[in-house]
Image (cartoon, rainbow over the protein chains, first blue to last red):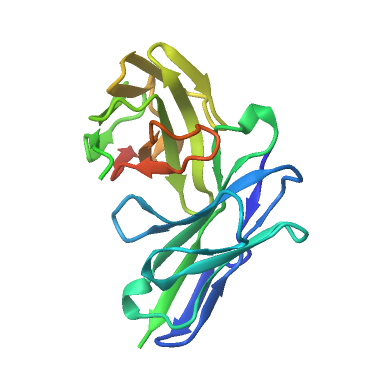
Length: 116
Length: 116
């Protein structure tokens, strides 16, 4: 079965500073990777996705992520954060073995808090 | 907007009572999912459906059943609610026209269920 590890449950950062949210996954076969953002009392919104091709993926709101197959990682980055980026961020993986190929498995989430 | 409506948005019920949550979509997508969200666990898959009357279990299916008699509706039932089922429940769809293996999920706004 798939597993996704988000290494930091909380990340505080000052406004305009860079941020990296870390994500590692378990599968050794081809997978598809996603980052979602959840603002308070809302559903999840897709930030970006890696399906194939370039390992650097750009998403909405200035976020980007880099797929690293050898390290089974998909870390999310933003060069300069804003107060409005305060939210919970979830890494998710789809694919791998046939039993879970259509299921999306989530990490436990990282709460990003941007401080003034 | 993927046209997903969850109802009710909030529900308080007593232990031992049956509860049904509804997910309605307007765009005839084939794949629909029910997740629960709990602090420290991210989102975990309860059940999913790949067509009318076609459903399968997810990671945390015990105590839950689902039904899909029409393409647009996917119902989640707690036959006898327990306090451990207090959670936020999210419905999601996989966008039609894309491969079910690599398409991201689009989420509803959630139902907050409290079992007292």
